[in-house]
Length: 307
Image (cartoon, rainbow, N blue to C red; front, side, top):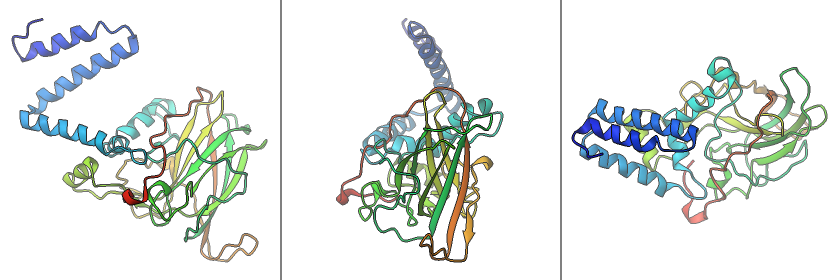
């Protein structure tokens, strides 16, 4: 097709895309072309603005490394990650769900741990935390043999892959639920943290005049064949940013009951204050699939970035 005016550009691209053999890919590409071209027309995008947008897309790729994923961070900062999650869980976004963002810091190679183990693999000051997890199906029956990845930031707001002071795999573990669908672990209470703002995501946050903090949370990923993989985050209600998460991830179903204890626990070796969390997860039948890990390891000490 010879292009004669701006309207014909969309027609030509749509005609080309309709030859895509895979029906789902064809559906996605046709909608992408229609909405993307419609966006350009709606805002009357200038050539200079288009060049700037291309620079931002390239910068996201250049900023992404083995220990940091700027693309995932941008998707969260625009609310896309949260929207995709809610559309695909909780009766397609109509009811509450425990599903939440994977985030940019999960590692595939988290170490297998026994129930009751600590996630601390190097000295990590902070209030102690004891977590009791139970996993059930939709009928309240325990789900045994589920693999559950747990990971979180330190009380200083850094994941181990960002922090040269933390040991490899600090505050990370993988547990197997027992016949009662349960397991326990010990750690330190996580803190809220600032997301990295030294790349395109930082430009977005500053332009929209908002803070760049995530509220404190624990990450969980529950995997067992026969059940839909559940990716979740359980947030601490006492965090000052609980209602203004820069990644738009907090829902009421994900606010945990972190109980503060002001008496020491000699049997657990915990000084005051320390916290406990009893967390029940409900998994539903479906496809068990581990996602592609957004990071692959720890950044070299010389290039560590802020949380």
